[in-house]
Image (tube, rainbow, N blue to C red):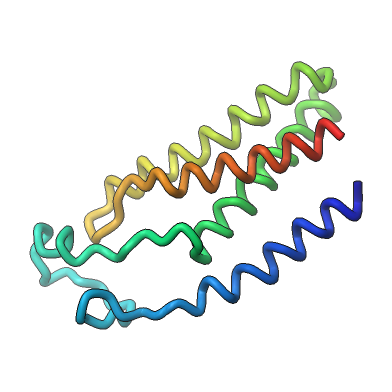
Length: 136
């Protein structure tokens, strides 16, 4: 079991730098991290950054949902004294709710962020990995 956790953590550590090394040039303009207050919102929608399947952001979503699921499971079982069968659906719901809430909050922000279904897929992958570990 420890080897499985270590292997997953090692994979995240190895994948994140590779996918974060992608280019910062988008459709002929350069993203330098400055706020874009003076740019009209409709133009920002046109210039929105592409949402890549293999990106550092997705690795972070997988890792965060994995850890939220595991930590929730621990709290529900050890601290609230629920059985594994009772705690697992609550842990999954907690992690999934956190991911959906994050995407809803992103959709409310003014500058080029949007509700991202790909982030939710990454969250689901992290939840499935944690569920597999819990059920081993």
